[in-house]
Length: 495
Image (cartoon, rainbow, N blue to C red):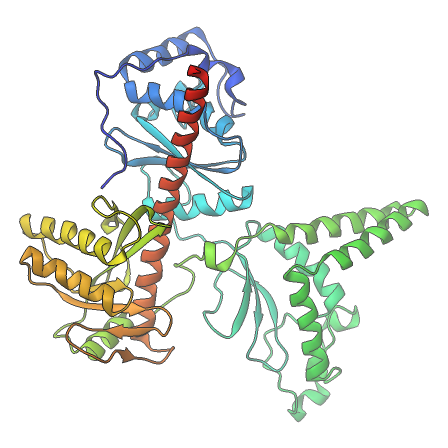
């Protein structure tokens, strides 16, 4: 299943010991200074671990761009994931002499046998990608990020007459417009205070309706007095005018911020010219806070599955009823395929136990026997490999197997069981466009309401399989691109 080739101890690799010079990259501020003893320990690593030696050489060709690096042992298992503003510099620090003594790395760097990387668009993207990978893979040497701690979101409610704006780590799955996740709760709250002075939205939890007479005599809070809220709780603004202000806020958050920032910078310069340095400093800090709003992830790319809660028990009970099963599906597996133009086709298999992701049960497959774009044959291959092995080892099948796709993908999976002469478990496929559920032998799909607990649990499995496949696919793409670049450089050198 791993894309890493086993290390052949007979292979000869040219090695330049200067990879351990400080010129390779910036030494991490927490690493100890090199000593003769440390250099001796690293020399022992070089002489006794061919994989470590190869990895040290490989890092020297990493790009000097933001990204995530993944360190692996000799069997191809990821043992550590880290983020970097400069991949070559940060990953290279693990192969400096001082890393052999640093308390965070000394006990495990000898396990490094290979290293890969994923390029990211920015430092923020790298931070969010690292967090997601650590939660998914659970590398044994990552101490942080393994828990359920999540990043904050900016949430604007959409089902109220007077929408609320708030910072939350537990956003609603419906009835709200979300922005984020953001990497700093402190910066987000600071920016929110600035935006509230400009757009004067409410942040309270009051249930305010436009024509409710009880709000006519309600006493507004302090925010109304200091002109940071238009006080819909006292009917001082109409529903239409309030929602116009909310639309202006959304335009600001969705890329229309430059006009406001330009005005604030002009005010700052004017205050400075008048020697009002206190006001100028305040405006400078506010501009920085608003600029930091762009340092955020996107819901589609960096969604945190643990944030959007789905009641697992209700989902399992609903699936039992909808699919006519004898018992609730405690073990559910989902399969998805990912590729780009037919290149580097991969498959993911995720496992849910009692309605929640069970990370030790996740599997990744590099498709071997299919050339070009052919999702049907790719599904046939991964199902054959997965269930042939389970059958041969006499391991239990999942209670429910879900294939991402429509009737064609489901038939491809059924063909794999038939060709392997294996009885399949209960199977369905979920087509994304209309969210239709297909079953073997049934012409018409099952169509459930969007709020159905059964559908939401299947969507959770499907989306998790898709995200896991995309991560693996990106890793392979970066690896193949990196290898092509290295081969190209070697060809130029040989000429």
